[in-house]
Amino acid sequence: MRCVLVSKSLDLRGYLGAQFLRAADRIEIVSHPHHGPATDIRLAVAWHPPDDAFDHYPHLQAVCSIGAGVDNILACPSLRPGVEVIRVVDPAQAQMMSGFVAWHVIGHQRRFATYQAQQREERWQRLALRRAQDVPVGILGFGEIGRTVATDLPVMAWSRTAKETPPGISGFDGTAGLDAMLGQTEVLVNLLPLTPETRGILNRTTFARMYRGSYLIQVGRGEHLVEADLLAALESGQLAGAALDVFSAEPLAPRHPFWRHPRIVVTPHDACEVSVEAIGATFRATAEAIRAGRRPPHSIDRERGY
Ligand code: NAP
Ligand code: GLV
Image (cartoon, rainbow, N blue to C red):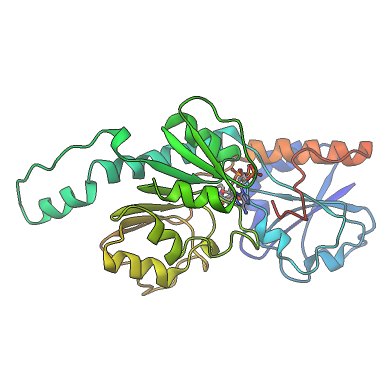
């Protein structure tokens, strides 16, 4: 069996490194565009594949993402129906995301931006202190990563389907659940996959339902956010600030208003990362399942989109 590496944004061979290539047990790795025979190319590892990429590999059975999200693979027009799409589930990545979210939640709770502004003005002024429980945090998405974030912070969490939640975590689901959670939220963390249902969910209506002076932590996908609505909410004071890690066009364009906004923190899609070891383990489990004629673990539901 052979596997093709397909990406228009990354040099996957360099990114995955020699260790990954060595560990690809009995699988020859080729890079796209592959000009030789394609009959035994049954596996791909992909990230932002070019639109026509999969047309070249008619015997493809599975495409592995190198991240938790698969939206960029599902959006590829040449991905045929029936091809399994596999994501990486990496507990270490979720833990890293939890640290990123905690950084910004505590930054908002402890008024880090205000202290920074005071320091720039050489102003010595104590501010009213707030405890963690005074700042309710709502998470959009209670999946592999949302659940890890929720064990480290007292939160409310919203998902598509109702969930049993551990003590200390309030669960919400569906449209009514979203409204109920937003009405009690001061920090909103977006950890949703990008699907037709979730595109544009961070919009003026969502912001208006939260407490005045709320904070947004946007770590899902750029297309979840209506950028003009965020700028308007910051301007009106409905939102006090935002930490943005993902953008609809990456890298963020030069002179984009987010770069210099005094109440926006920009990080370059760096909240956390999947380890090459976790990608390797996913890849090997996928190859093994295909050889055995089983469905690979962590295959996503293509109908649902995540
Ligand atoms: P996951 O395990 O698939 O969980 C997704 C969660 O979103 C589930 O709780 C699901 O609800 C919920 N959901 C999906 N569609 C929904 C809808 N229409 N309404 C309400 N809830 C909905 O995904 P994950 O591993 O936690 O990752 C989540 C996302 O984080 C990724 O897809 C990616 O976009 C983003 N991410 C970003 C970074 C970064 O560096 N910034 C890194 C990793 C991941 P159910 O539980 O009911 O199915
Ligand atoms: C990163 O964005 C991922 O999906 O793992």
